[in-house]
Every structure is written in C-alpha cells, then in structure tokens.
Length: 145
Image 1 (cartoon, one colour):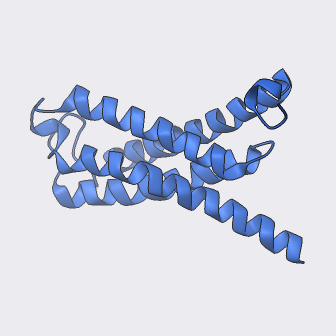
Image 2 (tube, one colour):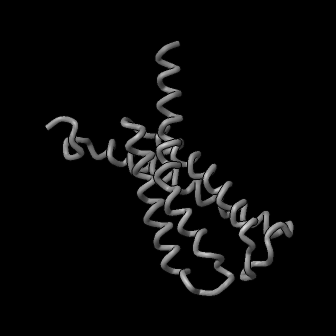
C-alpha cells in the first residue's frame, strides 16, 4: 500500500504535521501582531470597543494575505504533496474561524457585524489553495529552469 498515510514513516508524518503547524502559527502571530500594532497606533479603537466595517475590511485584507502566506509556508515545508498540506491548513482555518464565529455570534457590538467571521470562514479554503498554488508554481518554474 505505498502512497497511503499508513505506509509513511513516523518522521515523515511528523514533518507533515510540523509544516501545517508552522504555517498556522505564522498566520496567528502575524494577525495578532498586526492587530496589536493597529490598536496601539490608534488605527483600531481600544480593545473591546466596536470596530467599524471599514476597519474590519482592512483586517480581512491583511488576514487574507497572511493566510495565503501561512499556507504557502505549509506547502513549502511539506515533505511532499505541497497542495495537500496547504489545503490541510485551510481546513484548520475553516474550523478555527467557525469556532470563533460561534463563540462571538450575538455577543455584542465589540465583536463586529456577522459578515466578518462569515467572511473569514469562506476565505479559508481559497486562501489555502492560493498558498499551495504559489508553491506549485515555484516548483514548476524551478523544474523548467
């Protein structure tokens, strides 16, 4: 049964899990760091205060870029099948975003309008695909050179 995950050595599986975790932590750290800078500089209101839709659109934009980057990182560090690793991180993104939406739904204006968490859920898989695609394009360009 070559090619199945059961036939993969433990070190290979650990590298796969590590690739996805590194990509995940890249997204989380970059997102939180940007949030903190924007709050500290007054671009975003103080923590706990309502955030306008325009500012949530800004947050959506940088989270989208960070998600593509994180999924690229997962694909780049993957021992094989880079797109599968990027998409695995996308699934993690869907799960985490859904949990965040459930936890904050109807919790008050400090958590913003419903479109914001819904958008993060919807964008998780397309950004994962884009990150994986960037890695595949890089590999193809390298092979063609």
